[in-house]
Image 1: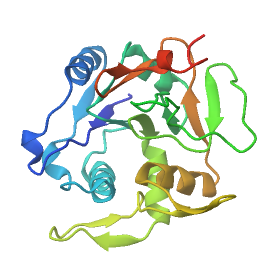
Image 2 (image 1 turned 135 degrees about the vertical axis):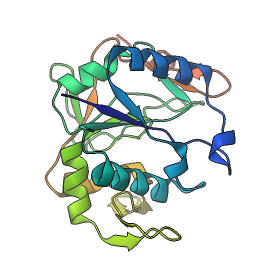
Image 3 (image 1 turned 60 degrees about the vertical axis):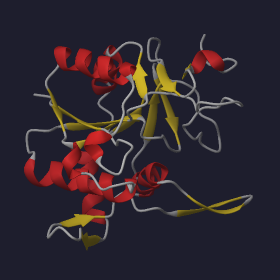
Length: 225
């Protein structure tokens, strides 16, 4: 049986005082009515440090949540117009797949990173180089495989040991060496180990990204057909 854990970073030194958008809250409740989900408590995260927070969540899922088959990494300023996109992503059977979303200012652009030889959409899938973790699904197998391949460290001040699956990596580009964010670093590790990263490009997969207003692919030329 598929069982989903939702992992959401919140903004605020005290995680319980963090703000979330109404769109996120309403969509999360709608998803919980559709399928069995587990909400990972904010108490397991790490103040203002996404690398440590995400590493800690992976460790907790693998160590003490054996019933969880997938983790949905879902930011508190994003929400899908149709929560059915989650079931659609699960149905693909892919280990690492995100819903497409844009940034939240001009110039508007996709967050996901395309492959050097830009792939074409096959069915409802587009293979990409990396996805942001604003609304992205990872399988337990993906988390287990990356954890086994990454260096462990003591999660001080806690006594637990976690694996650095989200540790930031360098990538060489034609413009020079860049330091990847924790989400794209995760994707690079997965691809370096032979895995593939996908975006669900099917209809009905619009995800809003909240800034001064809600930004979607409708703001991007050619973003919605």
